[in-house]
Image 1 (cartoon, one colour):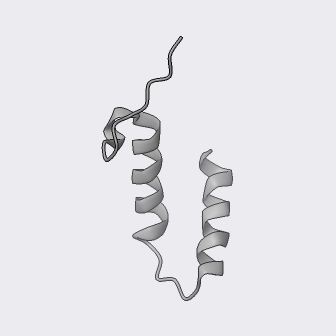
Image 2 (cartoon, rainbow, N blue to C red):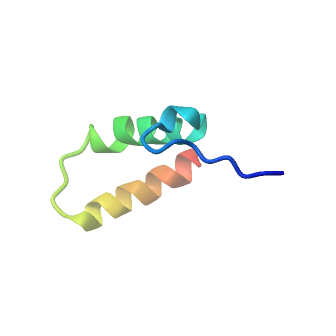
Length: 52
């Protein structure tokens, strides 16, 4: 068995990571206007509880 790493800058080689990045961006980053990092952390934790 040998580890195979994805090429740098090629997230589409790992479908799960590509899905995570897309859905997180669509559901959190593109929807809210954040006032501070704490708000981002709270929303990200809530999102992860629902989707992961």
